[in-house]
Length: 176
Image (cartoon, rainbow, N blue to C red; front, side):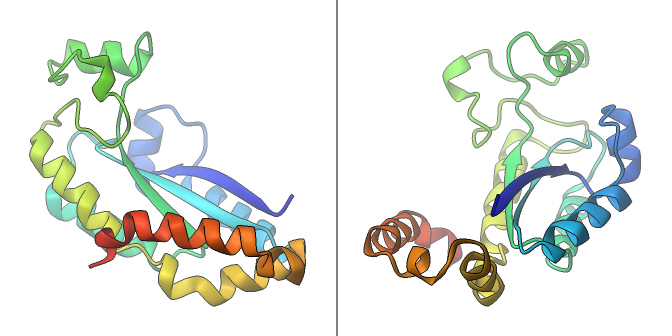
């Protein structure tokens, strides 16, 4: 194994308890430490809108805080309560779902509001998080872990490089 995706979901202990995640942020930090000692690249994900009472400033602070967490690549998505889930039932009961158009349930389209934030603000916060991503600032750490676990030939493979460049070009507008 050379990389792992961790659903950090929130840095707020109360939010994690409320959504019954069964772990806390200190356990996440310990897991990150162990993974990095073993040269494993960590991709961590935070969910915007998970805390239904968070303000815009609360979420921006959480995004800024994540810059200081030892994650190689951080990703963000919007809370998306999938059909049949307890989350969907809970949000429907609270009248927070704004659409039943299942084609919008992509984790990048707002399908709900929170008690504090409109769907537009949630989407604006997602775009804000993309602009604040630290992936480009941590390229040395990522490259070092890839070389240690996969070897230099993997990194210098022309097919891998072309794929990486194409992927970046598709989303480069998010980093402006």
